[in-house]
Length: 222
Image 1: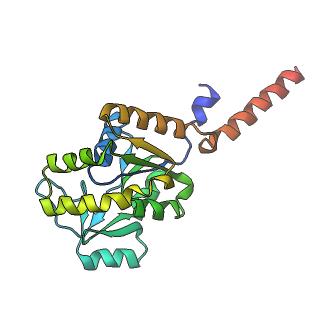
Image 2 (image 1 turned 120 degrees about the vertical axis):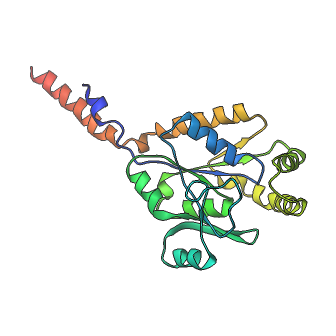
């Protein structure tokens, strides 16, 4: 077996932050990326909101009471947390840190506030942040209406909030316009592949290049 094959794969995982206003496509893109690469993990958020009929505990969210959620925050068990439309959301710390140490990449489907908190946390060096924009505000509203999850009042509240969310686009490493789902997914794949190959994410290269140097010295000695 080649030396490179023996030592590659020793990198830490990436914390991949996907943010967008509601309806722009971050959840769809997260799902597509995990279908493309089954080794990707999804950071399951905790929330105080009630589960929807098609949602499963531990798969879509960890559903917690306000009291239990508050205790998790006070005990330092959250990487980030925020209140959105009257409910609390947050990313439990332990499963994410375990995955990154094991070299597994983790996707976060969170808003700009959560993304900011994670970038400023101890995980900051592992973060790749991507903001997804809608092609137009009219299309954003159409997508919210078509998915049929929210009342007209909630849709209006989401639209009202979207302007403030979009204003944070420049805080992200990458910004994509989701005008075509297939094209957007292809660009996300390119970003992820490139980030995985960055020199500073390849700690095995130090050992590998030392081995190449040793081969030169052995060659010169013969």
